[in-house]
Length: 316
Ligand code: UDP
Ligand code: MG
Image (cartoon, rainbow, N blue to C red; front, side, top):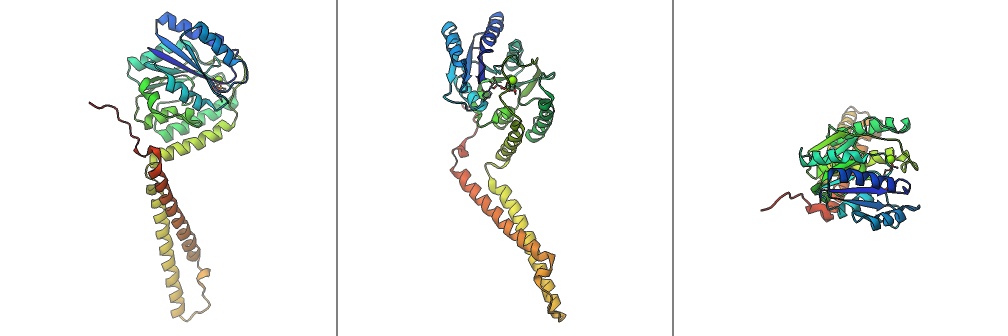
């Protein structure tokens, strides 16, 4: 099979028939063999009935129904697990992404050799309250992930080589950083294609402003996991030791100052009068704590199921 289209959706009943007809038209025109996997993320409207109806009429339409709303990442995760096409394309259900982009996204994977191609909504039809923070968000994501050529990490329209989706784990709200997940798994041929974007036709956006707060926190944990996830002691132990050494030097300074004072016969000089006393106190306490955090981190990572999960590309 050439293409699997994975569509996560939450309350998008009005859009579905139109989206399906559009995808079908593009696929038929290009003679692709394909499947469409609608992942119904606990919709409260008639979305699931629509999907069932479509799949009765069209054998290439499949559906997965969550019992409740879990989020876009879990929906993608299940869609990816089910996908069988050589190329997997993800697309939002709200008709903001255009299925007309599919043939080129497919070609870039198959012919240009990309592992992942992300859409880039150069001209967006979203409110300013969303586009400006998005710019900032993408700039940060580019810096932290080291994927310098992407302008739009969170674009719902993306295509993947099948290997990619089978070897990454999209969890929590990590759908914003799939290119980063792919890169960490060793898929580093990541490209971009400018895509058409349209205003939402039906319904309204499912993400509020907290997307940006959560987005930054997720980026931070991804960065930490990919840099130190396997060896937490390297970061905590290093900072901890450094602080402890500074604290220790401060202790010596305090001691020497006290001795000098004593030798001069000044008995009123208290160690707590010296700023070094407080430096010594905080540095040694914090240093020890960080050290302990490092040990705990090591123990946790030693017990984690991921500890021996490495990407083996081929064996003969
Ligand atoms: N979506 C989902 N689960 C959720 C929230 C959203 O499956 O909990 C789907 C939604 O139905 C749409 C896609 O994710 O197909 C993108 O959502 P939306 O269009 O609301 O995001 P925006 O375009 O505003 O970034
Ligand atoms: Mg949308």
